[in-house]
Amino acid sequence: MSPRMIIEGGRVIDPARGIDEVCNVYLAGGRIVSVGYCPDGFQADRTLNASGAVVCPGLIDLSAHLREPGQEHKATIASEIRAAAAGGITTLCAMPDTHPVIDTAAVVNLVRERAKQAGRVKVLPIGALTRGLNGKDLSDMSALKQAGCLAVSNAYAAVANPLVLRRALEYAASYGLLVIIRPEDPYLADHGCVHEGAYGTRLGLPGIPHAAETVAVAEVLALVEEVGARVHFSQLSSGRAVNMIRFAREQGIAVSADAAVHQLHLSEACIQHFDPLYHLRPPLRTEADRIALCRGLKEGVITALCSSHQPHEPDAKLDTFPATEPGIAALQTLLPLTLALVEQEGIDLMSALAALTHQPAQILGIDAGHLRPGAPADLCLFDPEAEWIVDDTTWHSRGLNTPYRGQTLKGRVRLTLIDGEPVYP
Image (cartoon, rainbow, N blue to C red; front, side, top):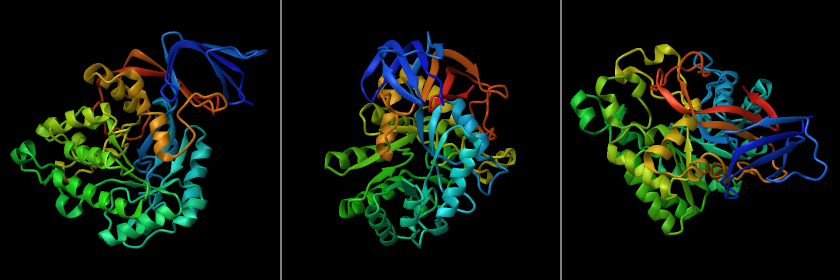
């Protein structure tokens, strides 16, 4: 049984209820008992001094590639959820591009069991939209739903044609499953590795145009309007796509969207020295796109920020730029990069934390990301002013492929609680 605990004197921020005040939080039995007042007869087993810290709901990450099963040379579920806990993340969506793919109840149960054995973060397996992510044959979504999947996705794999996508959306809608789309037309992307722009052209690297994203977004929006499925666009990278989502929502089309937080900080200029740590998918785009993503977050068009965590073994980044594998290890940088948007882009702290807590929960349709009495005590305590260096002493992911290695970031997690139990440190 989790101890009866008082978290005392912290700045409590609960975007779901509009709370931002210095007060106490009372926990018992792994759940939140109250916020701001002491319940009658409450006696604590432990009092935690949270002075100088922000106390908020545990973070919810909508996109992480945990690699296990099948790619344990890159990372394991155990290693990556340790990193997630260190980053204040309490709920993590595991994308289906494992080996074998998460397209059967057996693989869903395997991922859940491995996560349970690791005993830290709550892992939500995302089922495959098509069998083996082959883009042609629909997965058994009924079985995936029964196994506990809340959503399905084809991750970075292409769907063969619009008819298959329409059938997939209809099938998912019949079971109330969210469909997570990473919009990219494979023919327009054409094996590119950077944004099709000035820097890519100057360096002679094959580019991916804006149209690869916008054409895919337009196709999905047209189908959603026809079939009424629940669709979430994952990891938007272009301002044009943000404008399309904005317009669609103004027309009453119920879709949501997120962006990987590093896309709101980095641009195509980062590739100018051929550094493969900036080989990402989707690619880093123009400074104008970066600004448009920030504006989309401020305006509520982008309702969540994710890590887009893609850990790799060192060899995956030790080749010529186009030959390296795309992706960034990013679980522990999700929170500090989001906090940096508060300082650098004028996004208020409440809104920034909303994009990491109750808004991702609303997208998934889960009762999480808030501090209401009776809710599971999944909390993050962080010092917004504390600085830390990304190095071997602080980094927990097996993937070392982060461009922030050696840099000093502000915003350090003091404590992560799952069901009232400390899982970090």
